[in-house]
Image 1 (cartoon, rainbow, N blue to C red):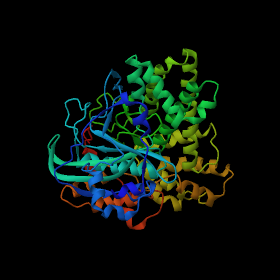
Image 2: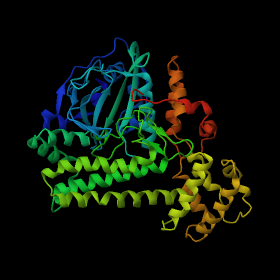
Image 3: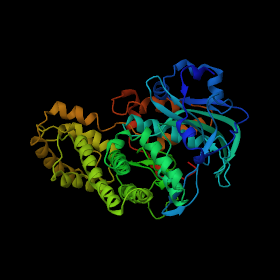
Length: 490
């Protein structure tokens, strides 16, 4: 197989904790074709672009031919789903096929999502549809280029075979990868099963491979928990800064490494709505945009309870107490950059809060408003350069007043204007994966046209750049996009 010339298969988790998974046979579709490939992912995995032209590459990513040194397994874990504990979950439609070591000594686990029934499919068919794979492919690569930790997508294959969801749809398989797919739910599964021996093996594995610095601490388990708390806080702060809503923040969808994992009914904010719910099945708004910081702590509490195998209640409470300060500090740092401020001050909370209030009241576009703050000049008291920004508001009067406070704050800062603008442009994306853009790509794909997927992949790989030929993709979302319903099958 051509890919093996580039990879060394190590399979560390597979070898270390065999009770953490079960074998499951890949069930490839009867016929397959390539839908799309991420050029950035190929680069990360040290694969040449021309590998996609080789027949065995298609066989590899469609599950028809597994790597000789790989495997076909589904991992087991538990989880709190919408607050309710489920003692056994697991990979219901994802099969791990091997861990690779790249030439730069990085390790990545590869999975095929949608490759058939697993022991944890829970009466499901283990399949994925083209619609859901396109959304995950685009979103995971988009977040990667927004500098947000995430699992990655390599490629999609599809078929003429039909998969049944709300309606018959083309089946598809997503090849994705990550440093690890270990979740909060892995720890919950072994702890609540009272399998302390395997729980210790799991913790030791994480300490050996992912939290090596914790081994030098006075208490390595405490140091690991503190790092998990920090990574989770920073991840959610990053989501909030760009207006990303995950949609299903169950503990089995939380990565131990602080990665964005399991894309389902996600969504980016169009107009600023703090109560935005991206999952139409979330009737109570448990996972609404504004609730994500609280849910992050809730999930960490569930994880931290499993650490009672090693830590005292006082130690656990102390570790969890660092979450809020980590999240707030990182969020303030990110928002200072978005506002063009060198260092956050307590008074900036009021300035930012006033802007959010105006955006919510007038349903201004979150991404566009922050991007257009680069138009503000301290010397332009008449707002001539800010006309495009002011046009984002149906009543510009309150925004003109806010700009006066904003200019006063900028004048008190130490950065010069050109440095500020560059700083803002590097922090405020011009292009995000709006739901309607993903939907348009899906609709084109369903008639056999994959060009829109490739175009969006290229566009979203440089979200902070001015790409004039793609300016239409930075426009406000059309009215019809408000009617899009995104479910877990998405």
